[in-house]
Length: 266
Image 1 (cartoon, rainbow, N blue to C red):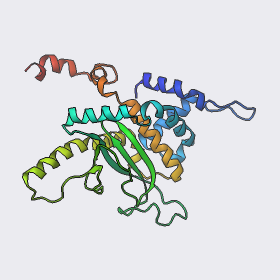
Image 2: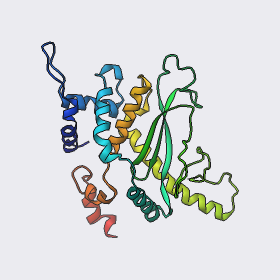
Image 3: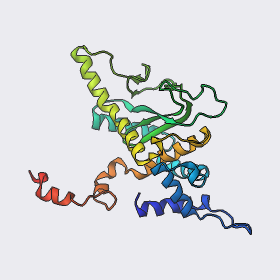
């Protein structure tokens, strides 16, 4: 995160993170609260070694969700379908669905509610994505799988982990498939892999998801939602990528020499 992005985020969050000073102690200022929270999300530092993140993550989510993870509108769905058709040659697609197990310490007296097929305890993050998160659903037990989305006019693409539904397309199973089915699988996989990219960026940017979270499931929900909204905040809009790669936040030192004297002129 660049300095300007941090300052902009702090300006939006400051009213929610500012606490009243009392005679007993001086409150932690909003800048420190936000910095520590982002450190926890990005490095995966132990939750017990830093101040409570629950309130700050909740503030992050409520601050960013309306702009960076808004409730989908008809116009948003139309734009998403257009992008999938133009970029990945897959028509009438509302997004790529994927899921991620957020590993947690087994909650007390929870039995097998959060126990998953991998033999660990987890909370499930399900997301619909194109180049960013479109819709996220977090908080399901680790034993749950695909959600019920009801009847829709377009389709969603997914992998073999999801059941086949009228609105949910998955690849044809098997290896010795006829040509037409292999071509379909190729185009579907090409469109679906964008969700893997988004989850990969989330996991690498916020390395808290690469370890077991030793907090209550209700806090895990806040951490995950804050991370997803922050991930969208840090990613440029699809139409702004040219500007991003020429900005201080997105440029690299060698890009101009490479374009002017390297492969770019061939």
